[in-house]
Image 1 (tube, rainbow, N blue to C red):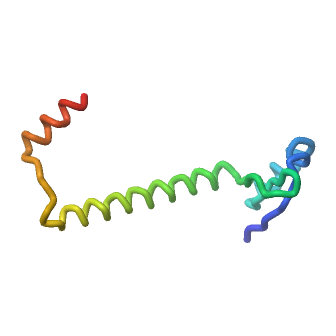
Image 2: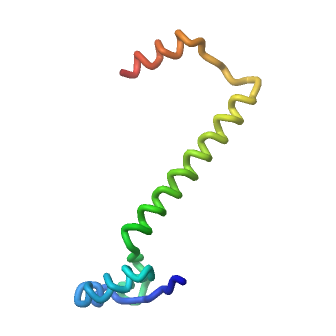
Image 3: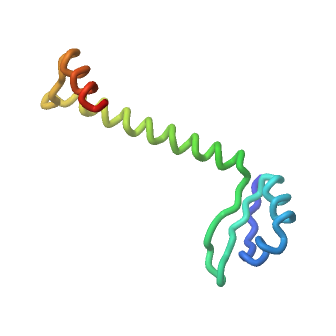
Length: 91
């Protein structure tokens, strides 16, 4: 189970190796500056998984928008040749 630790930016500067060990153990660290939460320290592995999650959610949302547009009778469609002509203009 994850644990969240709160440490100051001074701790980050002075005790990075200790904090890195906490992160390696799959815990999270909230970094504070002047008593206010400023950032979160997580493992690169967790960050990568989070980025993948956000990307998948973005693609799912865009696909849902495209499905709604395709179902709308007012959507204007391009012919195959018109589509490739437009693509050629962008290049």
